[in-house]
Image (tube, rainbow, N blue to C red; front, side, top):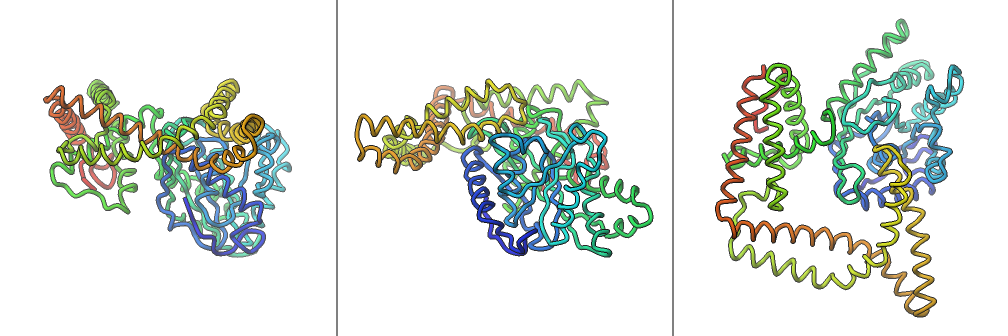
Length: 480
């Protein structure tokens, strides 16, 4: 996740922000890179390079959601954060260094609206100065992949900036969808940010002068549709996991039939649209043919279990195991793992205790699912340096100063190599298991392909029973 800062910032006139902001953003990018296996940003080109912008995103993962936006947007972002976070001993100081603005929810503000007047004034002033404001209009986090009813804060900010300017004030309302997979698991979690098309609000800004509350409700309704169009809503993350398995089976079967695959730059957008159509079809058919929908779900579950037992993905199913391919794979990965083993072992040894301690502390905190990733990063920021210091002292005390210097120089490189080494070792082990299973059972590969083909065939049959207007602008079976 990288970007070049250009344009004007909210206070200083520069997007780079203060030195403190740049340092915190650099640390945020490092933490996200370390914690998440994959971070995809779709539609980055839609972020306006200048002018006032309100980034409005769904909210699933506590402070991490804001970290993702700060890391993605190269301009300085002013975060509207819940007031209690500023009292958090680990989260509060970075928020203040970022220039975040506290928001008093109804729980904290009670019946006194004046407690948020300063927040609105600061946010509107930043927008008029051409800054970027981040707001989570759901008002709170929740772990499930659904969109809660939006509050009206984003709309009031956009209209308030225009009113404060005494005329047209170009403020862009930018919807963003954030979707997580396995959100709280270190190096297994992944996330996709989908940046939508800037919303049109000029017509309602005019209407706001005569019918203010009606204009606020209309903008909020538009924003709800815009954010919902950037995410896949499901009952839980387990269902989203099954949907991802079904999606890969669909595209692999489409490729086997010779259908054109999505272009690399369009794949993420088309995958999102495909999943949304499937979920619309599922909700429609669940009311009319619940038994058949439940049976399809069970078949997807069995297919995923079979793939996990073998140790391959749907993409790898169908690839040939030629002698040359196997030999090249063994030599390349065996050499890489052997050469990296000493430094990887050192990295694992240096980081094992901090890793274990962080997990133990977070488990004892008893926090909610949406706070798990935030807590792990915050606790790790304290205990990793602390325990590294203890380890360094032990090395100096029992081995000497030259060993301490070597320990310090290798600490970060060995830790990063250990991450990469373990992940590659896992892939090699899974591939080896699949290879030997296919050798032991020559019919296994054919059965898995037949299972995938039957699964996609059932999905096509069900799609034919759904009216096109339910699916949306494109039929579910369209390869695009």
